[in-house]
Image (tube, rainbow, N blue to C red):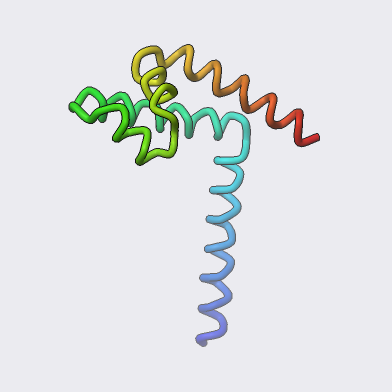
Length: 91
């Protein structure tokens, strides 16, 4: 009984891992993840959290964090362009 349950749980966990991997590593998934992060940063900034604190917690530079908060559309476009360059260099 325990072996059968472990097999079912293992397969379920594998399916969850595959789903997460596909959502995050696809181009659209990466873009969605960055958009969510940027929205959260803007919301935190609107609540009074300073840019240096945001940058330190997220692992970004202070300049980049300020750019995300001030002009989200431009920051998103620059992030997508940077990802393309990194992907091309990896080939």
